[in-house]
Amino acid sequence: MSSGNGYPDLTTFKALSFDVYGTLIDWETGILSTLRRLTTQLPPEHPLNTEPPTEAMCRLDAIEQDLQRTHPTLPYNELLAESLSKFAAELGLPLPDSVAEPFGNSPGTWRPFEDTVPALQKLARRYKLIILSNVDNVNIRATVTKQLAPVEFAAIYTAQDAGAYKPAREIFEYLFGHARRDLGIDKDRGDLLHVACSLYADHVPAKELGLRSVWISRGSDGNGRGGINGEYGELKDKTAFEWRFDTLGDFADEVERQFAAKQS
Image (cartoon, rainbow, N blue to C red):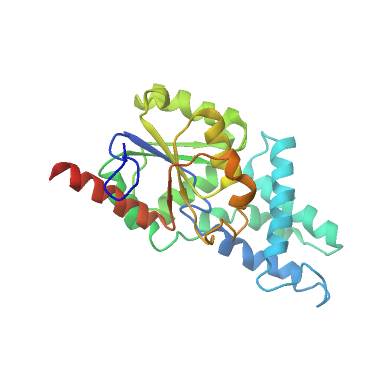
């Protein structure tokens, strides 16, 4: 069923599950200040010494993804610090513990996108809100209580809880099982819609697992290029999201439009 402007119906779902860092929280800006402390030490001609340091961020992200695959039970704050240490070692740069350890605990201090909290407040009037995040419990608590307040979430599930990082199917199965038991939300009954920016971590496994999804394509151009969330051209055959919005605010506005149309 399509809405009046071509979007499929959004009014039938009972809950939304959210990726957090990249979708709700501006994690790239959060990482940049620490990353620049390393890349600016490189020679001017070094390919990773750019502004903004996009290639350096991609390399750090690749190291992080590798650690997530090989150490799925390592808490994210430790994994993030280890990723930065490996990145610095690759470049032959010194990295004092006074930089690496605080970096691991920095996600809880990263700021939300400007539209995030108002959009979540709108969406909370229509759905139960669930977090599914590749993070540790300490950082997510800081994010929820300090950065996303006063929004209330019905449930918060993390990689630390599941013992696996997205895109592993185990963390999504953890979501499905707990949402059913904790909240009465059944993915197989069509209750759940997943909302995320990352194609690789969220939308590829969503297609594999039959989870309907919304792509919040922050920072991407018309072909899905931009940021480090995976280019749409490379992954389009592996994804099946049914909605695409530039921001969470745009998504929330479409939800409100559809509910209003149904009531008129």
